[in-house]
Each structure stands twice: as structure tokens, then as C-alpha cells.
Length: 435
Image (cartoon, rainbow, N blue to C red; front, side, top):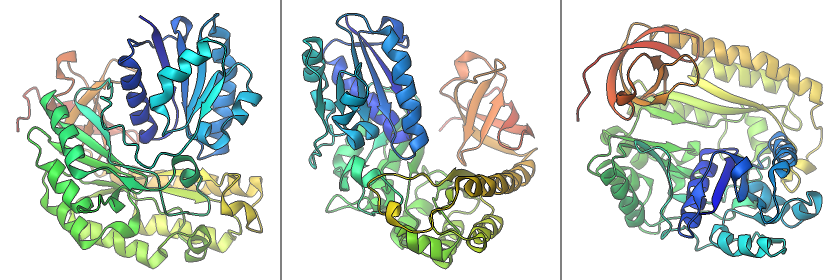
């Protein structure tokens, strides 16, 4: 049986796409391996959001090519493949195939052609493609990503996603529910609904509120998460569905990008600072105790010191539970490239160095306040270090506990006994938490 090795970079959508690719190739007899040295086919599933991610992939291709034997295939798939297309074949001679997010069905054919010496690319957008008939091959049985929407129509000036994933389109609600039902029947108890602006989901008849209620009603599904939403798509209907569907978890990743209305306007975000704060208040009113995390970009073209200070003040005001913070990355093909007054790299770095301690300080103070409290957790697996189990609360807090392998995939009560500022240590109760 041929062996397939897939290395994944980027967001949860890429993780989900790697599972789809494994599903496509499993039907052709491929078996997954974690060792590129023995693989017959090596694929790198890529991210194009920041230049750093692309440079990492290019460097990694140089390492993987050392494993190629006669007849082996090395391919680049995903967003970077879509953005660069056939030019990747010219830049990296050892690459045999380049496939964008809508081309995974062509993997078996292109691999066969590559083995015959033909290098090829498939980066055509396919508005109909949702891979409905492809059973994803997932490593985790208890928790699963479920893609409900592909592409994006929002055209933020800094973002390459509309150019790498195409126009927004949503799966039919019945198809999503069928997939979730199959997952629940196989033992999955937690699903994360994925989309570029997931709460703008609409299949022509049903909106995101309908989807949350339908997925939350599937027998056996205990937790429903979603990412990443767009702030102004939290309609009253969606807020009510979140509040009234017990399975929906008390955590939202709410990308703000900047605390300055003027910067947000240049980013072509569809809200200003005041509207974002209104959304935060509405979420906290609808779902008491909700945890909020965010994305923040510093050094966007034209950002002044005063505008950066507005971002700092927003972080202090909202009190996010955590934040992913980035320096603005130039992406060729995006409108932001044409904006004037690009911020110098050293200024971007200095601002990031001021933002990160503020974000961590807020998170640390909030987490210290949770020490001593009890939480329901899903035991996800072995932690990377220390021989402990990694668990996660409904509010997306990670706690490391002692316990046997048999606990993986079950729910326990854990009392937080300490925190590093970002993760917790905990003492787990021995009894199961049952539905």
C-alpha cells in the first residue's frame, strides 16, 4: 500500500482540508504515515496569510526533497499553492504538483501523472465544491472540525484569503447535520464549525442561528464551537441561538485587528471601535461568563502612535482572555499594498513588544482569578511534556492533569490548582461526567 505524508501549516481550515485529502487518497489505497522518510507521496498543506508562513514552507520543501526517491512525489497544496500557482513549479524544481483548496479531488490523477514525469498544477476555483462525498480521515475521535463554509466575500484590504479560497459559499444545513450525526454515531462529542466568516453562513434557506440549533440538537453532541466569526454578523438571532442552545460553548474568537476606527476603515473592516464594543457587550449579555479571544495586527500602513495607543486601550477595556498578535505582513495582490505610509519594520516590532505584555498581563490576571474553581473538561490526549493529560474547558481554557490513558475522550471535573498565566494545572475528579 502506498504511504502518504501530509504536513499542515496554518489555521483549523487547513487541518480540516488535510483530513479531506487523506479521505480522497484513502479511497485509492493510501495509508497515512508520520515519517516522510518512508512516504511515497509527501504533501505540504500551506498557509498564505503572512509572508513568514510562506518562507517557512519554502525552507521545509528544501528539507523534504532530501527524502525523495525515484518515483516519489512532493507536492504543495492549500492557500500558498493557490496564490503562487504554477510559478511554484519554477521556483522549487523538486516540487511535482501544486493544488489549491478546490482541487483535492484531482490528487490521485496528478500524483499518477507526476510519477510519470509530468509536473502539473490545479488552482481553478470551483464554486460547487464542498467535498460532500469525501469521508474525512480524522485522527481524533472525540473532537472534530466540520467545514460549513468555504471562501470569503469581505475583501479586507490586508487579507489574501479571498484570492486563495475564492468567493463565499455555504454547505446545505442538512448536509452538515448528516455529517455531524455520523460523527456522533462514531463517538465524537465535540464539533467545531469552520468558515472564514462562519457566522455569515447562509445556505439560501437557513442562517447560522438555524445551523447552531440544528447541530446542537444532534444526539451525542455535547459541545459545539465555531471559528472564525465576523463581529457584525452576530445578529440577534445568532445571539439568541447561542444563549438557548446548551451545547454551544462559552467561548468566541472575535478578531478585532485594531482598536482604532481610522485604521479599521483603512482595513475595510465593516465596523468601527464603538460597534465592536457593542458586539462585545451583546455577547457578554447573551452568554454570561463567555471567554473572548481575538486577533490584532500592529503596524498596518499609516498606523500612527496615537492609533496604536487606541489598540492598547481597547485591549485594556475589553479584557480579552487571550490574543494572537501579529506585525502587518505585505501580501502581494491585496489592496493594502497600494496604501501609503507603510510602517517601518522596527516600529512594527517595537509596538508588538509593547502589546504582547499587555495581552499576557490581562490574561494572567483573569486566569489567576480562576485558580481554585471547578470546571468540566474534555480530556483531549497526552500533553507534549511532563507525562500529563491535556484537557479543555467549555471556555477554551487548557488544564494539565494527572490521569490514566483511559480518560482520553471522556469528560471530567477539574479543580484549577495553579496557572502559568496561559495554561492551568488541575486536580481531576476520578468519576466520569455523564450526559
